Length: 190
Ligand code: GAR
Image (cartoon, rainbow, N blue to C red; front, side, top):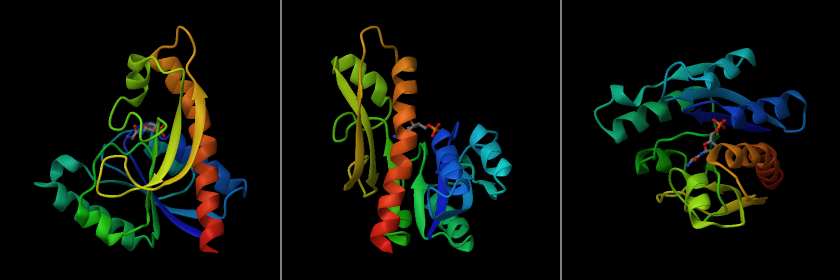
C-alpha cells in the first residue's frame, strides 16, 4: 500500500481523482494528509469531505524557501507519509525537501515534458501552435519539471481552443494518468 501525502495549491481535482480511486479500490493507497500553501482553496474541502487531515502551511509565514520546506517535511513525516504527490502545488521545492524524500516525490504537469515546463503550460502550447500536447507524471528532481518520466498521455489541441478549453481537456486525462502512475509505482514497489 502506498502511504501518500498530497501537496496542493488550488482546486484539487487531481487530489479528488486519487481520493476517488482509493475509495473505489482502484488504487491500493492511503492519503495520510493533504497540505496546502494557500488557505481557503477547494482542495482542502475535498480532503475534509474524504476524512483526510487537511493542513495549511502558508509559505508567506516563512522567511525562506528552506524554512517553509522544513515545515512541510515535518508535517508529512509526522503523518507517516512515504510518497509525496505534487497535485497542482505551485511552489518549487528546495534540496531541503528533496533530500528528505529522495526519489519519493512525484509531480503532475499539463504538457508532454520536456516541452513547456514551468507555469502556463497550456498557454505555451497554444502560443507555439502545437497540434498535440498532453500531460506528464514524473519524479521530481532539483530542476523545474525535469525529473524521470513515469507516464504520459497525449491530448489533441483543437482549432479554436482557449486556455480554458484546453485545460479542461487536459485535466480529464490528468486524472486518469495520475491514478495510472500511482498504480505503476505501487506495482513496482510491491
Ligand atoms: C493541473 O493542471 C496540474 O497539472 C497543474 O496545475 C493543475 C492543478 O489542478 N500543475 C502545474 O502546472 C505544475 N507546474 P488541480 O488543482 O485541479 O489538480
